[in-house]
Image (cartoon, rainbow, N blue to C red):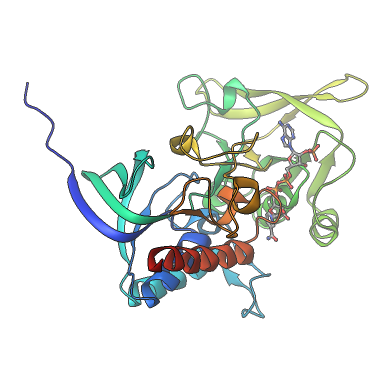
Length: 331
Ligand code: NDP
C-alpha cells in the first residue's frame, strides 16, 4: 500500500479560517495592512462558501443598500474586495489545528490535503443550523435530509413551488424562511413550540399578515413522515399543553430553529463557553476585544457571538480581529 502524499505546506503571516462576513472583512483589513492572508473557505455553515449570508435571500439591514441586496451578491462583493488587495483563497475543510506553539499549524482537506502555518490566526468559522434531533433529519437512508428536509429556504424553496411545506421555529430565521417560501409554495404551516415568539416584531408581523402562512402553536414536532420512496410526506406533531396529536401533509420540512457554533476542531485548544462559542476578550483573560485564550489567535463573527449574530456585527468584529492581529504581530 502506498503512503499518502504529504500535504502541500505553506506559511503566511495571517491565516483566516472562514469566508463569511467576518472572515472576508478580516481578510480585507489584513490585506490592506500589507499582510495579505490565506483564507480557508469551507462549507461548515451547511451551504456554499460565503457563510450564512450565502444561504439567505434579501438582506435589508446591511448599511449602504437602501433597497436591500441579495446575500450571495453581498458575499460575492466582499470576496472580490478581499481578493483585490491580495487575499488568497483555499477551498477546503480544516480537519485539525495545533495552537500549542507558534507558528500555528492548520491541516485541512480540499481538492488536496493542505497544511498552513501562520504567525497569527483569525477564526471566523461561524455557526451552522441546529436540528431537532429527529431520525427524519438524518441523511438517507435513515432520514430524509435533502429529500424534503432542509434548513435553507433560499436554496431549496423552488423545489416546492405550488406544494405545502412546514417551517419550524419562532425566531427571525423561521419568519424569514416562512415569508420567503410563501411567495412560491401553496401554503406554509409555521410550527413553533411556544405561543410567544423570539423574532423581531417587524418580521413576525410580516409573516402574520401573509395570507398563506398558517401558525400552529404551541406544537412540538414528533416525527417527519416518509412516503414509500422515503421522501417527506408529512409531519406528526403534538400540542405542547393538551397533548393532542395532529398530522399535516407536506412535501417540505424547513428547519429554522437557530444555529450552533463551528468550533469542533478548536475543542481543547481554545477556551469555549458552555454552548461551544469561543470566549474572547476579558472572559478569556485578554484585554483585546477579539483575542482568544491563546495569544495570537483571534475570533470574529458568530463563532464568538451568540447575542448579536448580525452580518454587520460579524463584519465589525472581523475588522477588529484584523487590527488586533496586526498589532499583535507588530509587537
Ligand atoms: P433564535 O435563537 O432567535 O430562534 C430560534 C427559534 O427556534 C426559537 O423560537 C426557539 O424556540 C426555536 N427552537 C430552538 N431549538 C428548538 C427545538 N429543539 N425545538 C423546537 N424549537 C426550537 O435563532 P434565529 O436563527 O431565528 O435568529 C438568530 C439571530 O439572527 C437573531 O438575533 C435574529 O434576529 C438574527 N436574524 C436576523 C435576520 C434578518 O434580520 N434578516 C434573519 C435571521 C436571523 P424558543 O423561542 O421556544 O426558544
